[in-house]
Image (cartoon, rainbow over all chains, first blue to last red; front, side, top):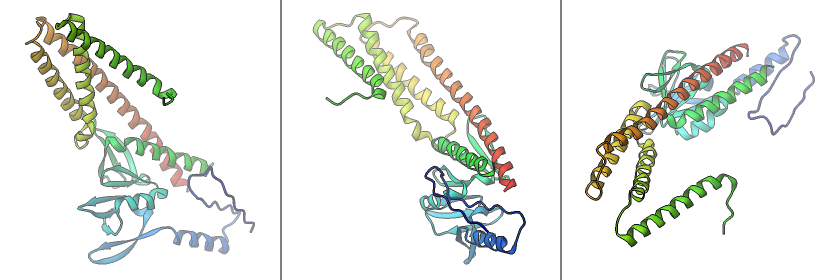
Length: 155
Length: 143
């Protein structure tokens, strides 16, 4: 198997592309290694620690200086501040939408505007979150960034 | 003297013009101890502009409210302050019988136009964001 590595200042996120003719044990092993080493965080639920895959988290919310990770159905407390979570999860498509929330763009189903001009995000699990006016531009930029990365990555 | 950069040119002209116009007007008022109609209008415009800018600058205080509520609150505050200034100025200069109506109109129309522009920009944002989300969903499924 030929291995190439490229350093570029133009890319915004590190990435690994694997080209193969046929799935082999060697490539499967490589994929397993890469998947297992994805960033994971520890979440607390009923005093039990759980390893959470960041990509499965829908959004983070902060209440009384405590941060919570919301998955499809479960909620876990995490030991990070919102600022740390923003830095940690930014490369996984997370973006700040208001003072206390960071959302996973990949879990957003659609955006809606209400009659009183409030912007709302509908998630894949039908939960609704509010985008504050202050973070509207940040959200828009992130959406464009993720879109361009995906288009560039799959072409 | 600090070099005026390209993007500072227009604000610098506005600030300089305002300072010069107001200073000359106020000096003339002090010198002659009376207001002409033009001088009164110029000072009134400055006061109303300041009120409008102040009201708009307070938008961050209404972040928890919806955009529509924020626009309405700012409009009511600005309108109240403008009507108050006209009422107070009525003690010094005579007010045109249509004065209140004219001011109401000249303040309300820009606000309605501003709110409409915001609403259109919001609609366009939602449309663009949903298109981007659709593309993201399609491409992330491929991966």
